[in-house]
Amino acid sequence: MIPEEKDLYTRRAARKKARMRRLKRRRALLIAAMILVFALLIWGVVSLARLLFFRKAVDPASVTVPDWVDVQLLDVNPYSRPGTPLTEIKGIVVHYTANPGTTAQQNRNYFNSLAKQNGESATSVSSHFIIGLDGEVIQCIPLSEISYASNDRNKDTVSIECCHPDSGGQFTEATYQSLVRLCAWLEQELNLQESSIIRHYDVSGKLCPLYYVENESLWNEFKNDVKAYRKEHF
Ligand SMILES: [Zn+2]
Picture (tube, rainbow, N blue to C red):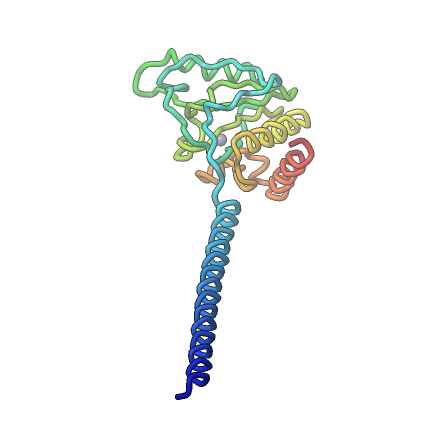
């Protein structure tokens, strides 16, 4: 090989090497970019799933009740306020008192009087909230403790008893409006899902709240009213 030819060969070989190095670098960059895009995609899907399917649980003890709630806590006792911790609330259970014409105050005092019972035939019943015929709201039990109202859902729900004027069980307009407001507020504060409001009937099959078991469409209307209230006020 003459010297010029040798020189040309070396230059060509060097160019080829450089081209190969550039190709390798590009390939490595492409792979890194693909890994990054893939990781971002996974992160996005997981975040979206968490947002859609997993709500952040709220500690009931951290919630402060608004001033339109009259707080009259029951004495701690085995029959109506056992003091058992309620650490996570997953739903709201609506009841009717099944005691026509009685007031929220009378029902609250009845729950409190159960403390004085003794013997084997003792009654155990209570509720976190009672809504009266004029729409007044009394709280009997803190949100951080269980009530005795909803059978096996006492452990993870908040209970609301509603007063009613007659045996048909229909709520007055004032009771109804307070129930809508209270449920919307609880849903918001406790970060509950929209499907979290149920009837006692949905837990145990008991005809409670009677009027809204017998009139399924009115129950659905009620849930829509809560949804609308929440959208408008929170
Ligand atoms: Zn009930």
